[in-house]
Image (cartoon, rainbow, N blue to C red; front, side, top):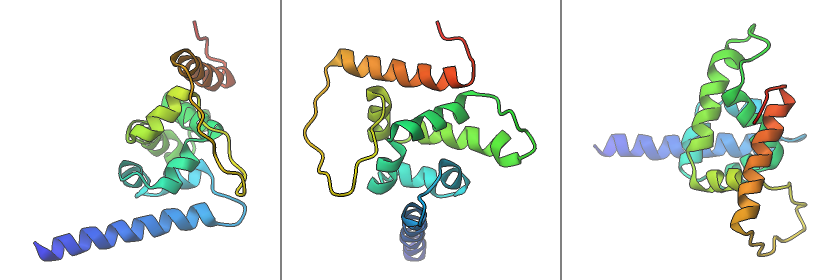
Length: 146
């Protein structure tokens, strides 16, 4: 029992370090790099703050929605055709914070030196944000949204 608990803690720390290294890499991290990692979904469930902030950005959410809902155009890659759609769907549903960002329409990337203020949106703004982000994601792939 003690050995299993140690291994779980050790794997959690390793997973968090791997994800943080990806987020810290020069030139930034891509959604695809995160979808390739086996620990990304578990780190979302564990509310890794840095990962959630990256995934909550509007453009990142749009890519995740696209992977989760659209048939891939390039089926040459196993990851794009099979792994990415399932991982993207798991990520979108694995965190309350991420779900809230999705409903609010995503966040814009913040400059490092700028502090975030307390911004409260009305329910109508939140619904419009969700509708817009989904509509934008689907329109990029020429899917009709009614």
